[in-house]
Length: 211
Ligand code: FDM
Ligand code: MG
Image (cartoon, rainbow, N blue to C red; front, side, top):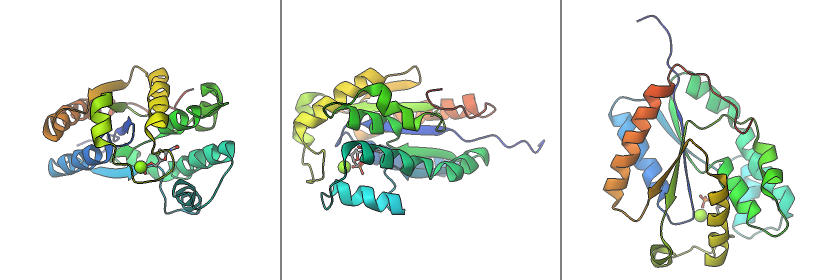
């Protein structure tokens, strides 16, 4: 024991609606904690802050917000959490996040008149994820699962455009996983990838995204 705190890893789950991100994020945190690894489950948008409430109202179609403005609010909703996220990571807690800046870019860039570079700019400098788990399901499975709840963006044609945008965002730290396999098989795969990454980054600094 030399008193050196090993930092936690930042693990991000991404993918289209209904691909099982939230289920897998929850199961991953449960497994880590049960195995003695400190871990916390996060999600974006974080709807409880003042900014998050504006976003929630927009997603529930209770209010209209101009497309650029809502993009910046989604980003601000991440930035307002950064001090808490950094502290947790530095204190050795692994943070598992259900959606992050990639959702921010993919969902806005799927709209008319937006380019990816513009969309990425506000999130530049956020804590860089150590691992991005990108869950995909084929068109057929997606249609079977598409019991959308009526929130904004929950439409099959829009989700297809979002998937195309995700395709343009792929990075070295992405693992693309087939989400049509069983919940358990997918979980086992995710848990293994995560354990490997936690060990690999524990002595590394936290980098800045897209810089
Ligand atoms: N979403 C999510 C965005 O458009 N931008 C973002 O930055 C984030 C984090 O919000 F349709 C979209 C994606 C989704 C909606 O997400 C709410 P959840 O996971 O269904 O709560
Ligand atoms: Mg949703």
